[in-house]
Length: 180
Image (cartoon, rainbow, N blue to C red; front, side, top):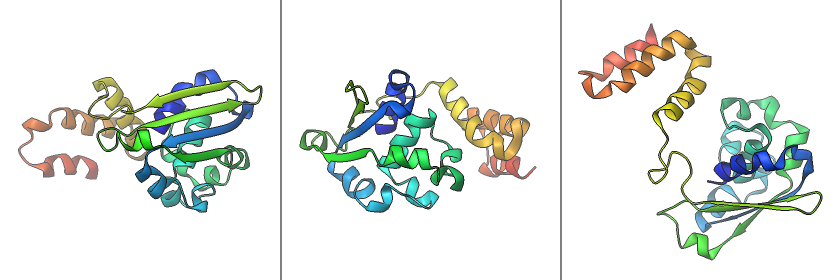
């Protein structure tokens, strides 16, 4: 939900060089699992980065997306991005903790260099059962993730099979599409 909030605030931020600070108010489990350890602010591996609240939020704000590209070694080492990640502070918020696990609440406050504050709270990020994605959004996400690896045609065949999953007699028929 912090990524969702960052993506929603991104148009108001414009150039991330304008960002003076990012405060993420979140629930206890998020702080404990993805928002405490120092390596979360300087991830060296994909595994650390994709379990980093500061990194994922900052890269969403900077890039407008969080895909495999945001976890490539070159992106993890980008000085400007790491500078932005360094501006992130994570705060426990008892009121948000009380709403977890029903929701995944995060409140993002971005302070711009001119002192302007941008605030967005998201409890149910896009894709959550309480905020489902449209079929078009699901298809876009699928294609974004699958086409680079398998190509447009193969991705399309797999996607078509997935849309008709309930009619599939054997999962091997779906898996075999990835082998061709």
